[in-house]
Image (cartoon, one colour):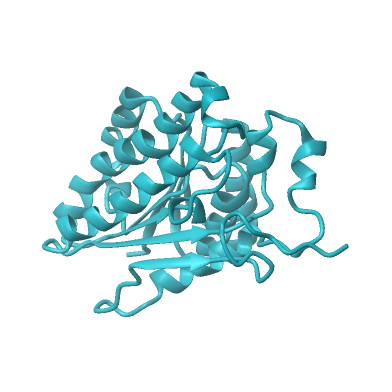
Length: 253
């Protein structure tokens, strides 16, 4: 049977790039995002370019009930999920902790931690029943190294790092692989979302150096998935050459 991958947050950026990469590798895809029009357009493109069979699940990972209903109602021929890529995540705001926006904090916590947990908890019974599976969690260098004004975002990605390690211990007995990728600066919609649509401010984040792009992370996902059955890549940190650590970027000029 053609392997199936369930990818969250596929409307743009890293999630879209992962979908395009796995489509090229011959996967069937379950595409999730909040923006239905975006995943409909992606599914059409993947069908035209790769003949990819796609199932669309347009829900917000923060909505526990919506996650449960969507996964419980999967057609029988989509219930064998070989790969889950927990990609949905975001940053909102960039301020010192005493000036932080509590609403922004809640969105980050609900998306980056609780959303990942909701999706994972509902997909796992299907993987356990199949006796195999592979979960790839998209973290961030912010989960390894904190930086100024990143407080709550860094905390949520630190939680993803801890969950990744704990999940691997819990799920090895089935056996289900668990891996994580922690990218540094990747130019996607990330900074536009963080700065709430301020494209000018967002563009300045990537000035003066060669940042990562979404396809760099997508290629790393495929590397992880393409290892032999007995090999698991536990943790992978990917940084631009100009970014030796989370809060340091060497810019030209």
